[in-house]
Length: 310
Image 1 (cartoon, rainbow, N blue to C red):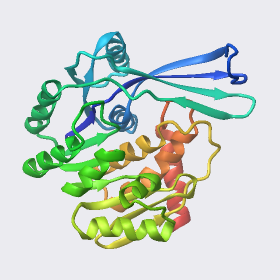
Image 2: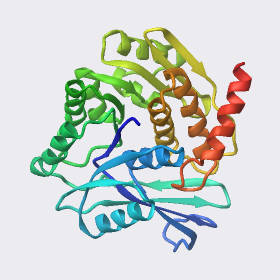
Image 3: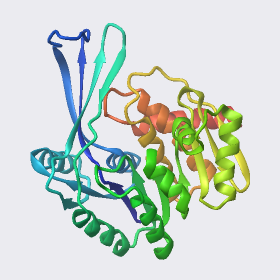
Image 4: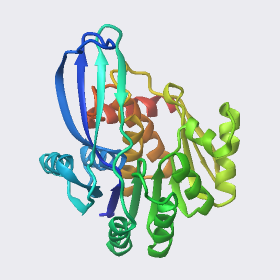
């Protein structure tokens, strides 16, 4: 069995709830409260487990919210490797307005970490012996922008396949240094690398350019409701989105990455893993709040997509 190490340096306790309406100044009464361990890499590990695989989670946590995060991990039977920090783990909130079906998401920047707190986690990654290293999500404050690039160097030394889903300067730094097996930006994140707006043709050229200069072996670009593309040395595969009734957009990208990671670890081709990713992203949109995708929905959407292609 392939060993998967999923990394979340900026985890969160994800709280979701519903409200009849959201108004400024007035108290907004909520109901249907749910709590999950969250943050990119956490969600990736949850999806791998939901699909029948196993991923261990490396995370930083601190304070009372960090303890709550750990309890939620244990309740979900996720294996974790904790690295303590002095600052407080963040709480994210998603509120669904029932009158309009709009979703309001409040995502704090997260804690401050020190180099001394971060280094033991990097040492652990180097010694772990993973077949797949998945780094997903933002970096906490004060973490060096080249942190994910440093993990790429570790993966190159240890022979692991490195999957990266991040944004802003952390993404730019990692792409500049290279060594990535699979990079998954959405089109907005790809635009931040390129410094310009991109239509689909421009996004395709940009993804192929990243592959050709050796920064990443494969690049997946997601377009939300417009589907996704996979760029590699063999060309480009474009798959439309699976149209479903959207309940929540939370975790769709993480579900995409988690499903691709699970599929690759099962020995599937990159193209098949990509189609599982598309299915999982759509499946996540069908569930409320931070629930992420459900196995039955992922496989149903994958099979439906395969019949359409064939």
